[in-house]
Length: 390
Image 1 (spheres, rainbow, N blue to C red):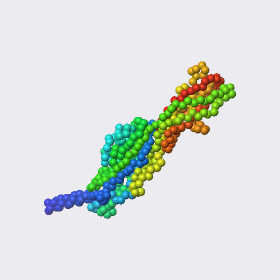
Image 2: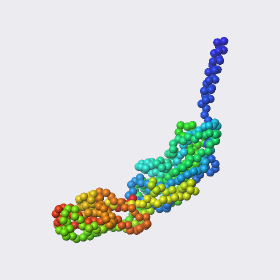
Image 3: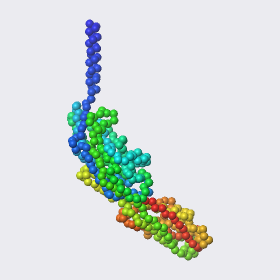
Image 4: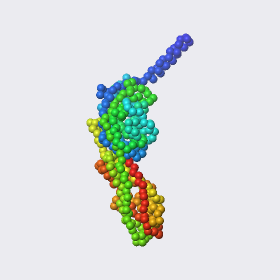
């Protein structure tokens, strides 16, 4: 009887083990493209046709940003489970299918290590979901791990409101000129469902839902203007009547710089005014806002010493025995009522987009008494000006 009792105990233990293992079996989720329209390929026309990239823009400047909007698409995947209710984890990713040109040697901000060459020196391209760029080898899971509940044995899924971007970045020196960016040199992007890290895996993943392909050309102007020298006569004054105290000044005289033979400055598109290239919710049409205007920066460096940089006062040339003393030259910025030109800073001016060949930079100058004693004589001075294009 003891032997029989021992055998029954053994079978009781074995049965418990069988029940334990059967409780760990999980349902399997399988997904497939919803129908033959998946993946949906969207052809995205580059627009507008022209932008301007200032040759002196800092590296990392966004020269162009265009968007693709998925809006509210049809269903993208169809999933089944062998046990409901159930759920499955997944990621929805942005990646690249092709990249015709290699990665650029760009380690700055933004998109370090994610920028591809465009065929134009100094300009790179990156496909992004906003802050995260992608490469062939490094897709990005927007939103991280997602969970889909399945109340029934089948489930249809779609991702709403997807927005992705094409970005042109200044990644190095751009020589003055005009360049054509052909869409054949741009990456082709994809959106796809994939398994979440840590599983459990869904059979059928990855599934591509969208392919984003660019077409057309974009002309990028990096041209500059001619800047001739300027000679200005500030006038002749009676020292005893005009300069009676320190700070006494003569009337402003316009000393405008005229930029000549200028190209059209088309402006550019950055985070603040994205070019909406494709909106599925609007039938795929584009909506191109006004561009951000280009600027020029003007820096003035006197060939003589600076008396008061903040107030724009420079010394006159006193190298001759016939030179005056006790006065300086004060520089102003603007037309009718100039503000003082801070010689420590660069002044910036918005460039017109109307194709003006000649563009006037409004500068003024006058004499100012800098000492209690003024000696009459020649009061000459020279300033070197530098024009930066942004």
